[in-house]
Picture 1: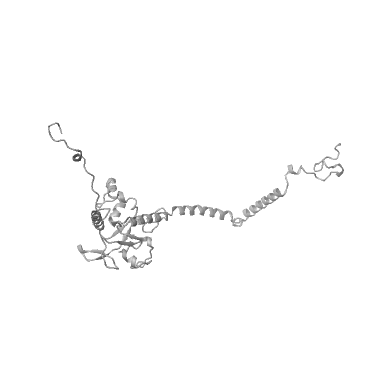
Picture 2: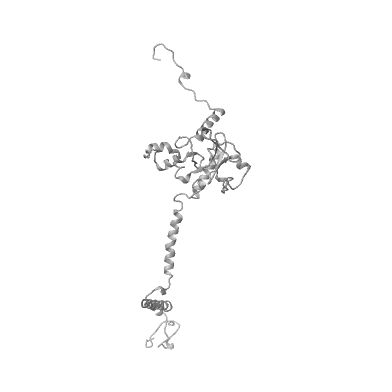
Length: 294
């Protein structure tokens, strides 16, 4: 290099080799680290999870106060958060967190105190956290181990007796693609039904029905007003005059329907004042004066 008598580098020394594919063990270690992080840290504020904890439709855990700050665009000190900072904090959650109806408070059963406090399943007593498959029910929010619903299937929550369906069993921080696809499908179904993750009516979902109802109500009122009898008129003179005008109009309509038009009547003969001797086959149906010459 540089014509100073040094060695000339080869292509193998200049071109970097591609990164080796991760092994199965390395992939599991990365997933375990991610699970430990998200089971203990709010995905929105990146602070430690503390009661009350809420979850969205994809099973992600948040601090409820962090969700409120995000929705209200207000920081801890009461100042407004800048737009860039807000997008940096919640760009991935803007379509999942539109209001408190999009989250459900997860009711964990805790054991211990202080730093040794942990979440456990109220039925099996096993811990809920990284490396375990935990779920919660919508809308009550009670958290259990997934094995509980496999061994004890039912339609009511085991703690509060709240009814639920199989689609409302939401896995917490799912890792398998099957669970993620199922949650995405559930979101699409709820959207078509006008519901949110908490099974509450989505804002604006009932506007079309209200608009249709408001259109039908004036039609009904106009129909009822047109069908009201004339006896609703309080003044007697006005009522009698109105009845007389309506009667004359009805009689006029009858005469118009029954009576023929003058132009049509002129096409036919009138026997009054005519002599049948002057009528023949050619002139039948026409009026010929009696004194007309033939």
